[in-house]
Length: 271
Image (cartoon, rainbow, N blue to C red; front, side, top):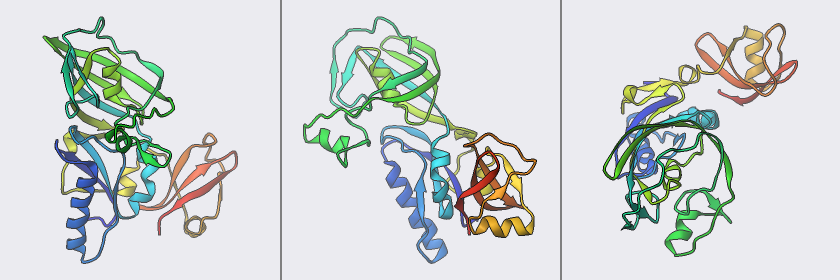
């Protein structure tokens, strides 16, 4: 089993993303006979199910690149009800008022994170403030909904499939309909990773997991430079400024570099 990579974990309902990370860390550390560093790339609420990217070893250093990937969800909205958390784990109230429209806007939106979310305001998670009865609104932030498809509607339930940018709160998309909350939520894909491929056992090697990034093959001298954080000339290998590139030697991932007009500067080095 690789010592570093990405575990495509099928998270069940009723556990937190932190619970999953702790479980994987405990198992891998017992197998290795030493403490293994483990993290994740994008949390799921306890009631939600689906794909969680668990990062093992030095893959934790690539977290931000995986966090930035778009997400795909399937969700069931319960209509004519409200929830103070926006999901089924909150305090529910039946109003009987059905939303005037089931259409959810797409495109670039400004979204205020829900009061019960892990966003920090003043150094503290919003959900901790909310549990004390202190409701504080975070600043609106830009998100993008690429697709919001109504799959079906029967009675007080409507099923959707969403494709959206990182940081989008699906339960907020649903509560914005009116009197509605998110009754079921399953993350089915993160970028090129799919729930159908999830397993609690297989760790995808980091270089393979990052193959959504372009790669530049290095010779021995370039590999030594990159491993020491030295910028490389782009040469004939053109890429737009600000893009990220894998620097590889064979199957070995040396670094992730940021491209500028004439250099590839390693920003994360894997030793």
